[in-house]
Amino acid sequence: MRIPSGIELHKASRTLTLKYGPEESYTLSAEFLRVHSPSAEVQGHGKPILQYGKLNVGLTQLEPAGNYALKLTFDDGHDSGLFTWDYLYQLATRQEELWNDYLQELAAAGRSRDPDETVVRLML
Image (cartoon, rainbow, N blue to C red):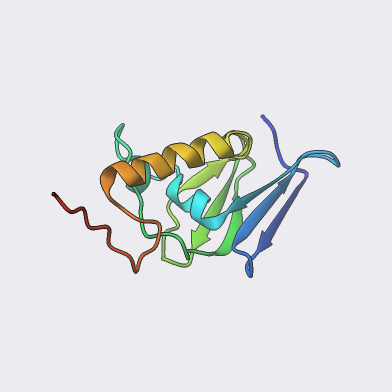
């Protein structure tokens, strides 16, 4: 289990920085964390539910959940996922791959990261 040696919430940039010693640091956007929340609302019950329109979501609070996780509160009201240390490290180290997969899923579903944008497909 990789436990961060430092955790920094940056509300203005809507990011969370996880430090694992002096040489290893990862910055995760609130949007990335929100769409990859381990909650049942996002993960479904074995079938993940695509999250969209989360471009401007921010983190308002984080608090420890025992010695094994963080509870993140997002400004869209979502606060039900417990991000275990292992899950956070997986998100951090696989961020590029997971983000690209997410963007492909959005495109395939005709959805947008922007809550004010509706994707319209024209059938010609």
